[in-house]
Image (cartoon, rainbow, N blue to C red):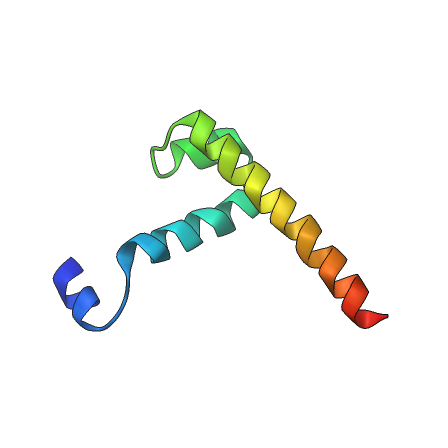
Amino acid sequence: MGERLRKLGIRLAETRSTALFQLATELPAAVLARTPGIDITVAVEWQRAAGDWGAYAAEVSRRNGS
């Protein structure tokens, strides 16, 4: 299946990272770690990154709207 997806131009690692990033914005780190089976420290890092990105995006949005 992975080979078929690659032939279609779908990059699995990037797709997985995008999905985890999205989950990090919606789930507590403990739940995020258990769902795909990643280490809790990695889940906390993803959640921090997601939070920081959200704050950054909001700030850029405010600047562009003024």
